[in-house]
Image 1 (tube, one colour):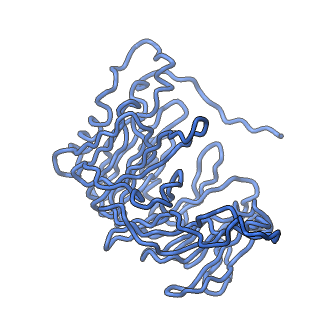
Image 2 (cartoon, rainbow, N blue to C red):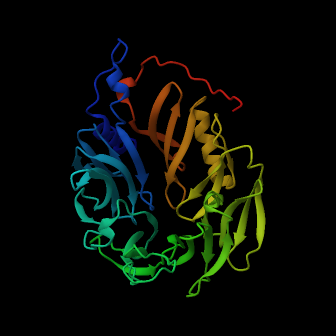
Image 3 (cartoon, one colour):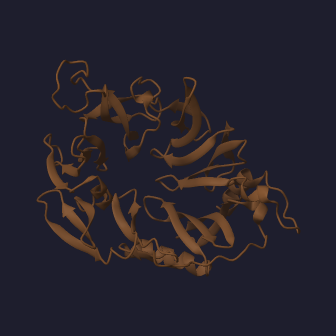
Length: 398
């Protein structure tokens, strides 16, 4: 495994300049990261890495414990992320600017499906004219057998026309499309419509089987945020929770398939609200003094930790198993911040990012069974060994 990881790191960092004794030029700091994102396949057998110099980004795919690295050259584009759709396809998202008319320019994000041989085989939504109007397509989930991508697109609204002669206040009169949930085949980029929203619909949350269980809405007239749910196999949506205004959307933290509940930040508490009966239970207290975020397990679709978002990053682990892995790796990187990026479905292999105020980020693969930590790549290899300034966290009353 160490040999394969080393080869992957070389692929990502082969363009790096040799370390210099003199202070690095300012251009090195603004050059952009050499490693943008790394993700391990659900079965833990392959690693996908997006990186390279800004003018020649690429995606590399390696199979652990086997020789060879497949590389897809992306060229001079903005890399966004890589994500596995099952065990045999990598989704690579890139961004670019496209001009519409003499003055309007939009930052478009598009997602390509890449096979283990490093060949781009499809672009998601490329055959759907309506969804191609969106600047980006949010991915909300996956299914494994068969491998499908659940993503947000558009479909025709089939609603009232804005040219109808009436002064009644109606929703969506100037919007010919509504949000839609699509199931896409990563091999072709094509798919089928799963859910048609209305003018208030902002998105859905899905369970491991790809079924929509939660719908998120913002009322177009009163701007209130609400969360609706439905039983597995059901067809009728029921309002589960509604906030008093548009800002109340910040109280929503996500849907947990393992708990069959949504997580909400209410009255200084993190609560789990059950889909079945609307009952709530307190998960954590003391939210008013911090800006928290939840750490999620993408395989089990459940929160496993609470990130306090403070100056010295700290996570209160709700899952002891993942917390123990984080503690083990943290011992190897004293006084540095350890971020568990993602891991295999069986929780034996972990992709880890390590950084510190005076140390640029670096990526590693941790094999729990073998107790091995192998380098994958450095984000700023030209700053390796450079003496950087110290930083301090300051708080003040405002």
